Length: 349
Ligand SMILES: Nc1nc2c(ncn2[C@@H]2O[C@H](COP(=O)(O)OP(=O)(O)OP(=O)(O)O)[C@@H](O)[C@H]2O)c(=O)[nH]1
Ligand SMILES: [Zn+2]
Image 1 (cartoon, rainbow, N blue to C red):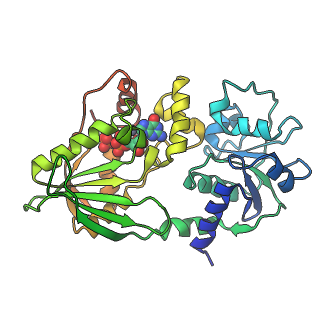
Image 2: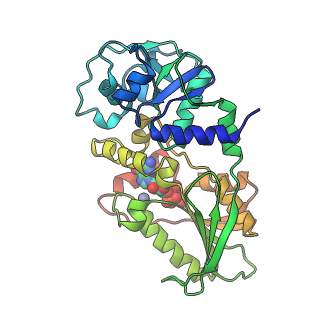
Image 3: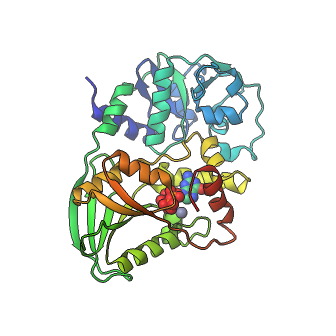
C-alpha cells in the first residue's frame, strides 16, 4: 500500500539530517548531514555519493553514466579522499571556485536507479540539494517507496481557509482569499479585485519572489510585475491575482539564492538551476487551476509572457480566452535575466 504519510515523514527527516530508506537504498542527505552523522550512518566509510545528472555534467562525470538514460542520477565512488567536506563540495556548485577539487572521481553503476531517482526527487520537493550518501544495507528510521512520493504529490488537497475584505493601494474594494494544503506550510492567496462584469476576469499568476516582492530586488522583474498586475486588474474593473508560494520557480528561497551565487560566477538563470540539479522551472500551475476552480472561474484572460502558464492552466481545464502581455521596463541588473527568458525559456516579449 502506498501512503503519502511516509513521504511527509521522509521530507521532515531529510530537513533534519536523518537517514531515510527508499526501496533498496538507505540515504543520508549531504546538505543537512555532518561528519558525525556520516560516521554513524557509514562506519566503514564506503558509502558512495549520489548526484543529479546536471551536477554530474558539471563535474565531467556524465560521460561515465549509462548512455541510454540522459537524466539518470550518477553515483560517485567513495575514494579515500571523498570525506564529508569533499562530498559537500561535490554536491554544492557554489563552492566550485573556493574548493579545488582533488580527484580523481569515478562514477560507478547506480544501485537501484529508480530508488535513486526517487531520492533526488524527494530532496527537490524538500527544497534541498539533490545529493546523498548511499548504502544498500544502512539503517534508517523512515522507510518509503517511490510510489509513496507520487501519493504524496497526488494527495495535495486545496481548500479555502479564510476570506476577508482587503483594501489595497490599487483597489480599495479588494477581497483576499487564503488557501491551505495540509502538505505545505505556505498558503497560496488570491486577491479578488472589482466585481464580475460578464467578461472573463483578468488574471495574473504571480510566483512568490521574496527578494523581488518584498525587498525591491533589481535582479528580476517580479516586484514591478506584481505592482503593474494589480494596477491593470483594478483598471479592468474585474480580475484576480493569484499569489503562488512557488519561490524561485518552485525550488525554494535557499536554492534560488544558491542559483544567484552561481549567476555571480557568470552562469545564466537556466544554467544555474541545471548545475544545481534542478529543473529549469519546477512549478506546477495545476494548483492555480484548482484555485480558480474553487473561486468558480473556468475562463480567464491571462496576464503573462510565459506560454507555459497558459498551457498549464488549459491542461487543467481552465480556458484562457486571451493572453495579455505583461512586460515592464528593464534595468541594468535584470536586462540579461530577461534576455535569457526570451532566448531560452520561450517567453514572448
Ligand atoms: N530559480 C530561479 N528563480 C528565479 C530567478 N529569478 C526569479 N526567479 C523566480 O521566478 C519566479 C518569477 O515568476 P513569474 O513572475 O511568474 O514569471 P514568469 O514565469 O517568467 O512569467 P511571466 O512573468 O508571467 O511572463 C519567482 O518565483 C521568482 O522567485 C532565478 O534566477 N532563479
Ligand atoms: Zn523575482
